[in-house]
Length: 259
Image 1 (tube, helix red, strand yellow):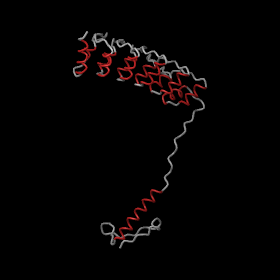
Image 2 (cartoon, rainbow, N blue to C red):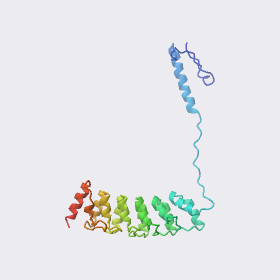
Image 3 (cartoon, helix red, strand yellow):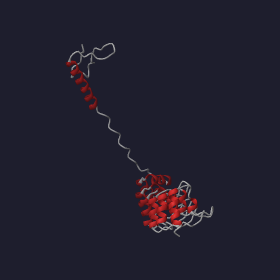
Image 4 (cartoon, rainbow, N blue to C red):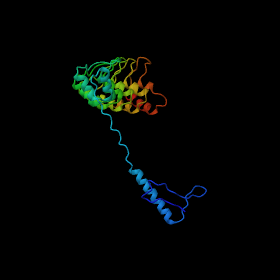
């Protein structure tokens, strides 16, 4: 016969049960089953009521007593505004450069930290500084696809026609990285659609080579020239269309034959 402890003493006393040869409980009366169900319910409630240790509170970020340039660059990458404020309040050079000649503003633009960018600009950061490859902060914003940052920079007088060492403009960069919204905003702000890089490629050449169909449409809609040839292969955008790029080929041929 199944013997169960009472509900009051089940915590401290073991449950004595009878089992068959296979180890299954033997329940001889409905009362045995009822007691077993009550016991299981009580155990579940007791487990649920056990106080769990409180989750550890997040560590409070403390500002170092001394913030050097490396701390400043890292803070620009990670949007640690208090560290940036500490660096600037102790006379840190806001236009200091890392080993790649990027400023804190460059790095914040690459990450899309709009609040950090606002703080740096208000504190006198050079908006047109260039890194080792002559890329500006506008190039960085376009490479990362950060439209809000691009707008912020242009609204504060950044040069959208600046070229890097490969003579690539921010529009070239937006096209190559596939950031349609950045390319569209640059065009709306008056970016030159037909400017050529060192190899003579226009943004349209790049869009065709990378099969950026929506950007091809965007460039053609705003009047990109389909007849410009580059200096390396002497090819126009239509010549760069690969066999599998059927939609782009049709679009370019239609525009090409209109002129």
